[in-house]
Image (cartoon, rainbow, N blue to C red; front, top):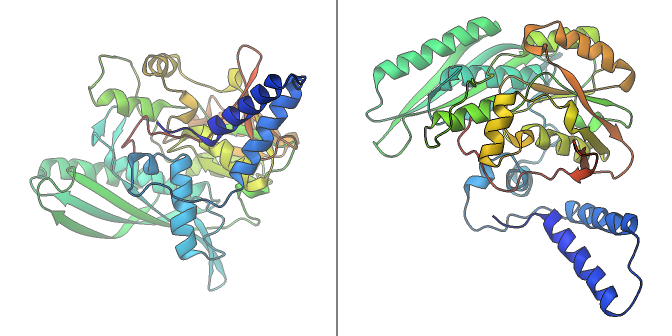
Length: 386
């Protein structure tokens, strides 16, 4: 795994400190050395993104630093326009006087069937959730299938039945689609692409760039269930745990939150890259600092235990039925109460605050009382999770 820019900044700071010591100069106080590290991190983050690899790696699909660089240096550069630049989960468009949201996503999860769901309901719920956290009421989906020669028809019927049931539960309709078949060995059974359209009926705009110092950051429930479920379902590890995916449609939960707190600043569903990635997106887009509290982040004991055995931080593990919301600090209690009143938000909690200090940096107050920087994900510990 290559060094992150935080590693590089730390190394450069240590080199500078060692150089001063070698010259017999007085070392800087600890607080000043920490500030040097933060300053180097900030300068590194503001550099123009550039893809340094010559070929795509699995890290480019992990939702972390490599994904962000790929999106900004390749796709955003090629397609740049005001509707795309916010890089929210769905684009907000105006058509004939009506405000609509448009999103698209692709699903390549392995295995196709796992405890708590399968690729079919994952595809529906994921697209519904991207629309919902953008403030839209989801209405219509498309479904494109890429099937490998030899894929069992019975499995395809099982997937489409899951999609039908998920769409019914979310109150949406699959209204158009496409099918392609590729030669055996050219795919992994079944890939699904979905696009979704919803109508934005409420005034105002949502976006992580709207976060302000003093805002509260809320997660709607325990994190990491989906990613750990997928990892264990592959059967490659001798670990057993009673864990199932949290895949679920969030549009009802989002509607209850917006009814209770019309001033919600932003929402994101915590998929690839997990909660840690969303916190970094907030810090970067709004040019603010974020301080999260480890003890306040809900994680099921089974997920925490499996994560420790795997050497994975749950903050980076994907969810498929959890959202992160940014709300004005004075509305935090009301927002948590609204979420907890819904079955999908029973363990909602405030996990951190937005602040002026260290803009662009996410810090975590650990269970031991110290703080550490929460970087963007560098490698890809859990490939093919969605």
